[in-house]
Image (cartoon, rainbow, N blue to C red; front, side):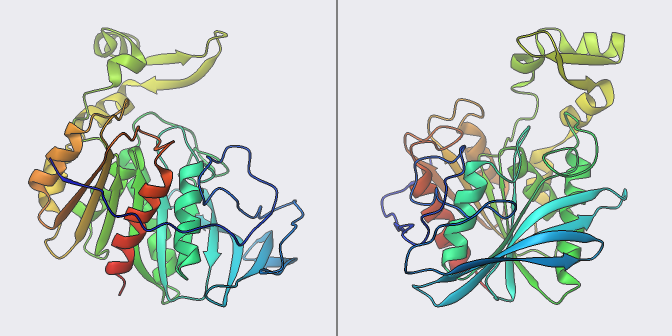
Length: 326
């Protein structure tokens, strides 16, 4: 088993006293500034103003504030990037003025606004690191149709984001993904050689696990027979459709092969909770066996969402990213 976490770098969120985002956890990073359509009340250590700022073909609001501890001006701006299919990917850029940017990727049926994405972003932002968190196509505010598998397309979405910022002479210093997003960043690193730091938070190694719990027994036979499986809510409404093609893409996604293909110069951190109820911790141990330049952190007692261990998660990720800054 990997190294246990003993040392935690606590970062206190004493900078903002704004309205809390309802879905944030009770962590020190839980207070955030709303980018659009919300007023702000800041304490004496921070100043904020909202002004309209025009992006290419888009009108968006920008929040500017000052990090008193580092004297860093932090600007949150909605940035829209087009993927190869012409779909608009919507994200929030936490601009600190650093040349380096960290990109944060959400998981299955999730968005950039998930509390973990926000917590990780604010932890990095506070250290003067620019961060971009965005919605994959078909999720959140981004255009496109939600799909069950879609790993290949989400890797392409991430590539579009990386290319966008690279074209502006920014350096992508790390890509971070949680759950399915963890799979996406590992898959990206297996296909490309332009990212040197990858953080896989609770990504899945054995891709055939967890499907029966979501789709029911004999899912493969039913998908082949009907061409799809509809996932319904408790009220009987169709939440989303799993096509045979998307199901087969997931089953054919080989994380073992992907891990072996990652360049030895790419540093990979895998973080996993010891009591993860969605993806078992054994998956993290498998990643540790095959990825060439790998560090493993098992957070004792943490579940899939790190609900009671968010501070420790943020500290571990922040320390790894800072150690590997360009």
